[in-house]
Image (cartoon, rainbow, N blue to C red; front, side, top):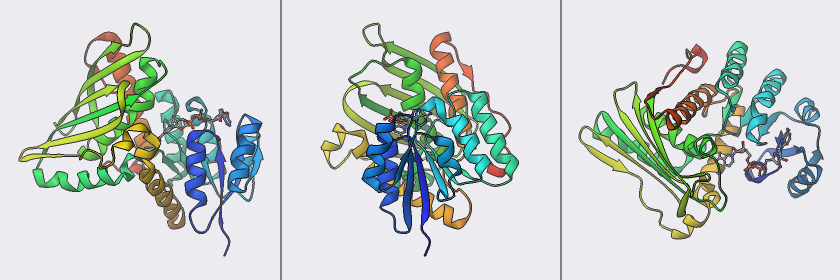
Length: 318
Ligand SMILES: NC(=O)c1ccc[n+]([C@@H]2O[C@H](COP(=O)([O-])OP(=O)(O)OC[C@H]3O[C@@H](n4cnc5c(N)ncnc54)[C@H](O)[C@@H]3O)[C@@H](O)[C@H]2O)c1
């Protein structure tokens, strides 16, 4: 039987995670790895038995490549996603769909114009067994009133407030949308700087179009990695448990290793079924709109509206 040939763009941490997970799935063959840095492409390609290239366009157009993973740096995603859409090959694009909301909307519109879902965005927490189990418990507490998302990160580098929100809080934003099955309409945010350079802590309160509220707490200089979610409904609350293995606090890759594997498996299944099924370009647009509203609110100190475009019918409206 012919194997599903996958091309990986970006041979860093996430490209490696995806290549190894996908390469471990029966019927899948990683055929090409592209990276702007020749050595990076070669190291990963030799690990997974693929061909290395620095020519991303050649990978997208290669007839052996049936499906594409975009795991290069954030600012490359929109252009590569558009090129992948033109090739009509199913594509798993790491978050963010684009670093600018208008560009994300452009990618979504290009996909909507094809009339079929080809893109899945790497908002992978929806595959985390702990989050999935929490989502199953949410309805038993009735209408959702409030979701609290807490995220701790042990960073040994200083990063900007904008990056903390776009690279880390973006996952919490998607968790809230997914659990509430609603869109965030406005946010009010604040931050504590880390010794005047970079960010130590970000907090945001949000209104959702269901009438629920959400709050985000993000500590970028904590004892270790830690993610938890609490959903309060009209009749009670449900929350994620502490990890059984405290070694998980050492490493966010380990914390979500099962989620990454399930994401890879689900994506391959969706390709077999003929349509992307996981987090969509619409999800990529919606989270980016919230990211940018939080970034604005941190600066303005005011409640900021989330500017969401109309949702194309291709994505339905959860
Ligand atoms: N879903 C998640 O949980 C998660 C976690 C970490 C990172 N990410 C996302 O995955 C992406 C990759 O992150 P990472 O941590 O692997 O970064 P990384 O820096 O380790 O790797 C990025 C790689 O992309 C390559 N690259 C840059 N521009 C390129 C281009 N135009 N063409 C080909 N290759 C190019 C770089 O040379 C580098 O090897 C980022 O967008 C990041 O936000 C997602």
